[in-house]
Length: 391
Image (cartoon, rainbow, N blue to C red; front, side):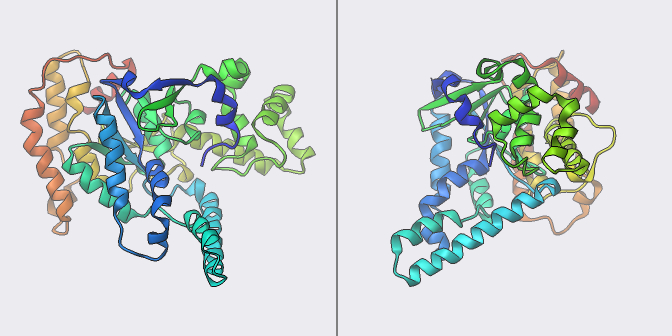
């Protein structure tokens, strides 16, 4: 999860701030990251398949801590597995299976302490856990989206269009995605603020402009990287040889042109992965791409929860977005709320209860949402084009 060595490199340049500094801001929360922080505390129950939903209570406690400072949380969860990440996921799963077997062996030896440590290494966040948390988020009227694939790309997109102001996570991949404002090390009171300009302070403009190549060379979720290269070594190497000398360098490392192609695909994944646009209510690429590539995800398909969540996630849009005309904003929001995702949605008798309940909540509140007080927030200029696409 993340780029090894990147956050420690930036540590001394992060700004420690009290979470209240972000009052009235919309903070995008990496939901899976929070769950992975929580489940080690109930690892033993999960290992023995003992029913336990304390993770829901812990998750909501963190949400309420955010809300207590008048911050607007927008929770994002992972969706389907991204084809480009399949190799990494397989390795992680093998590692977890190995930890599980070692835990069982430790129990046989009566080494309880070692077994408990290994149990923490083999637990997974399941769809059931995500679903349990979502049910409570609905009750608390908290915005959420399950992204088509990776939370990283989804939150990056939401920040790019101004849907969220900051991102709360522990994953350094967001830096490589180019996010402008990230909050790390949230302890309930304080966070460490990362801003993109920090990259220049840590090294230089070259580091800032080439962070993706540097991260990929050192190893990321989409490519194992070059053996012997960490972040600093990759930076020094790339600065010395330049992009034009990369192929020769790879040959020296006994890597072929295929590795360079994999690097290019990794860069495309960081820049063009499939995400969900809550304004257009459809899947798009993170950044425009003439032809979508299979390893970036499916632009058409639906993941398990997307239909439910996408309807709900837009219901508070009017609060925060501003177009040239307030009436036009109302019309756009109404169009979004009234339009089903497809004709099949109207005729499918197997729609689950949760979907119907979420839709009812959205429709019930539609009239109320159009009467919010006249609070205008500056919205990034590029966002306006997404509204125009809805006309």
